[in-house]
Image (tube, rainbow, N blue to C red; front, side, top):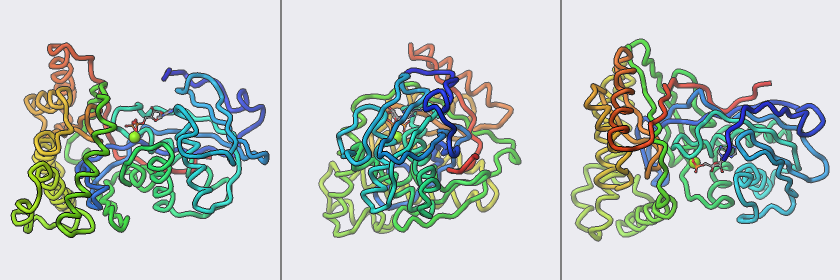
Length: 382
Ligand code: ADP
Ligand code: MG
């Protein structure tokens, strides 16, 4: 995918003005990884980085999409012909949302869409959900659907699952739709209930660094589906609707009932749900620094039990901890992507430099560093 300055305007592309402008953010998940499709807990925050779209309805049933990061061409699709697997490349993401809305019975037609994004793509910061949610909020407004944020998130998730073919859970889309500035979203993926948990890092002189390792290992796609299937098999063998239903206290009795290859998956999911609840308790108590050991324990579980880490994310975590971070973990699905590190604000530059130096010494591409400040979810801009 090319990068661009995004100077081509909507009017340049489509010869008229847009009807409105919308944005939906990327996210980092503080804790609660690979729990959403097990109907468990997660604790994401929205990033200031977002996908912004301008759009206007069309009455001829055409969907035309252009992205400043999409290679320069307008992709033209016929809304009535949209079907899973039928749209190659990045245009599948916006097309998927339009398909999902129509498949759910919502009366939406075509549109001209221009999008631009500063969410790094493929970095585990959920640029895909940001894109889907931006399209979803735009169509919700343009076609007067009146759908609530969680409904739009579920439609965006269905778009990614059924049309793009990625078997993700609902956390990324819920985060992009429902997060609020200054808060983490305590998400219960079973019933989509949410609570905004205030996170005031600045008051505690803390900074949440995001270290994008710039790698995405190819085995991720198939491995994700296999992990999800493994969790579902384990739940079925235990006679549970989902692993969420297994309490930590019942874990020792449950593990021997499972084949050995499924035990680490179950151990991760049960431990991770408990870590989310623990993290929320610390935030409620106004002690964000106490998240540090929880983050690091979550990383160890993803590395050793779930086995979705990789040398680059492990090195970033180790280097950040050695440089004084309170805690660090990979965030997102794994096999590359980004690491978060909770650090004293005064130490942020030093920790980022230490990770960069460790990557240089290992012969890896230099990581990209962002600072995560809990930002606003999907919204209309104008
Ligand atoms: P992540 O969601 O972690 O960023 P994914 O692999 O799930 O990674 O999604 C990345 C894909 O989303 C890209 O390969 C591209 O198809 C699409 N995408 C993301 N951002 C943009 C953008 N600004 N323009 C066009 N497509 C994008
Ligand atoms: Mg994604």
